[in-house]
Amino acid sequence: MSDGERERQGPNTRLAHAGWNPRDFHGFVNPPVVHASTVLFPDAATKASRNQKYTYGTRGTPTTDALAGAIDELEGSAGTIAVPSGLAAVTIPLLAFLSSGDHVLIVDSVYHPTRNFADSMLKRLGVDVEYYGPGVGAGIGDLMKANTKVVFTESPGSNTFEMQDIPAIAAVARERGAVVMMDNTWATPLYFRPLDHGVDISIHAATKYPAGHSDVLLGTVSANERCWPRLWDTHLAMGCCAAPDDVYQVLRGLRTMGVRLERHQASALEIARWLETQPGVAKVLHPALEGFEGHHLWKRDFNGSSGIFSIVLDGGGTPEAHAFLDALRLFGLGYSWGGFESLAVHVNLSDRTIAKAPQGGPLIRLQIGLEDVDDLKADLARALDAARNAN
Ligand SMILES: *Cc1c(COP(=O)(O)O)cnc(C)c1O
Image (cartoon, rainbow, N blue to C red; front, top):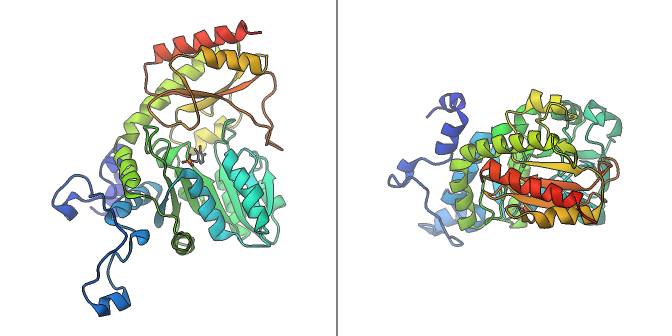
């Protein structure tokens, strides 16, 4: 199929067919799961020149190519690497584009382990790490120095969902010579395509919606033409390749991600709107809600919203938060999200320096799974009741 024809297709059609042509392997609908270290060469001359498509397990297989090809189609990228976790999908591009003496700007509402990596490893390697507020927009230019090599974005922000003006940031940062990276896990490439908005490197914890079942860890990093060679070289230098069964599971998950996301989106929005009317809830932090600060950016740039958002309880502290969580029967208490089941966590934002925690009560993050909305509402109503009666 021509690229143009693919470009005109709907998202679910692309998800169903991207990255793999069954005719390339005897008509089987799915690619083989290739377990490989050694790849044989037919003769010494071919071995010496390495002139064949696959040469060693760390450098790619038909299985990793199928996933990378699918993500490239969805992201509009020149190349994609698969790595063993979403966190590795953050750390590898940062190591690829930063050197001792460089300055990096990272959004303050970033996923906490990204901050931990920057504050420990990057600082130890001699990188000057600085955080900026998510509302900075084109003002990022005022924070840039002659040695600013990377501007790292995440929109919406982790746990508090602040929207960033990605096109404005990317335009200024790239003009000033920086590489712009975005952790795009929340939206998936279905609801936002960073490279279309000037971003160079798009990062995903494929652990979340692409895998979709809370049983696989995987990350993907996709780059445009200008950044792809360096990203690929770093990937090979680090030896940080993903395992074949995990890669396969994520490709399998991608096929149904569109329909799952539609359900996550609809259920999360319905529950978010309902929570806005419930006693005991001071605020709902969800970018698709009309009253949310930054909603206009979500509306301008994104095609949809996913199933994770937060609420601020109306007063109280840790006892109220724990009473809320302990009253839940369907929502599980645990990290991560993007699976079929609902989850809740009490969020700690003590690491923030600019995008501070909302005031007024504990912050609870909710992942809305694929269960029936009425059952989830009943569970949340019970938890709100428990929080009000706590002490
Ligand atoms: C979960 C998450 C990651 C890390 O993914 P893991 O596979 O759990 O390492 C990175 N970024 C964001 C925004 C995430 O939510």
